[in-house]
View 1 (cartoon, rainbow, N blue to C red):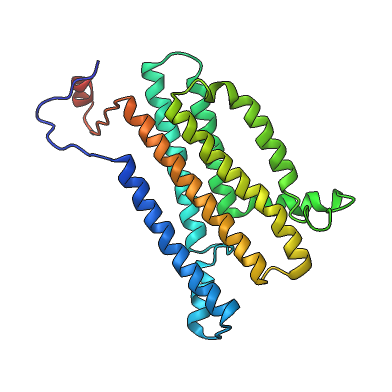
View 2 (tube, rainbow, N blue to C red; view 1 turned 120 degrees about the vertical axis):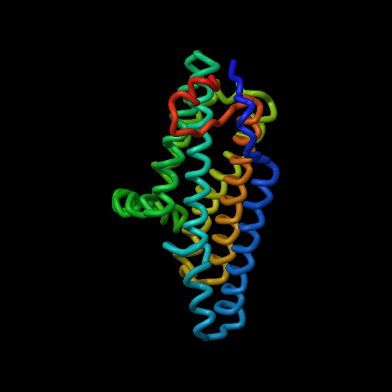
Length: 251
């Protein structure tokens, strides 16, 4: 049982809904900037310094730009929340189920690194030469094969645990996971076909990766909301102090 000393008057309040709305607002702003760049460059074909700047820093398919950074940050937020839940469960739940939170946290750390360093692109460079056929471009982005296999294995590993979670949390986890995987792998198959036949800058391909990245970001926001909602149900107390005596007094 945790009791907080009465002299601790400052309370930090975090609303899962407000956090999700704030993240979605950022996603909408990024989508607007990306769409402006898409229209200026691919539809209006307006060549200017402004067009190059917008495309450079806000293109959803770009690297080392604002959307890529934002996606990496969201993945790290999810990883941090997963680790926090693991720590809380370590205190209130001694069952082995808590280890799944830690494993999932590590997976999201890898996803954040992949988003930033484009690890999957290097995987594709190794896998593509090993294929006898890319199925007319569907497997051009060949990283989808090892990643799909990894997702399948993780699905088997987490399946029983996911269905042991509260129904609301479970449903949000499944929805966000299906949206993210469907966008990241499913859309990539179509994009490989379009890339091989029309090129990376064709309007068809640009529209496809716009929806892909939008769905991925939306799925992460939904997952973060689910984590915050679940964390709230655990009634955690966060006490930060540089004095050991105060920590001992509060517990």
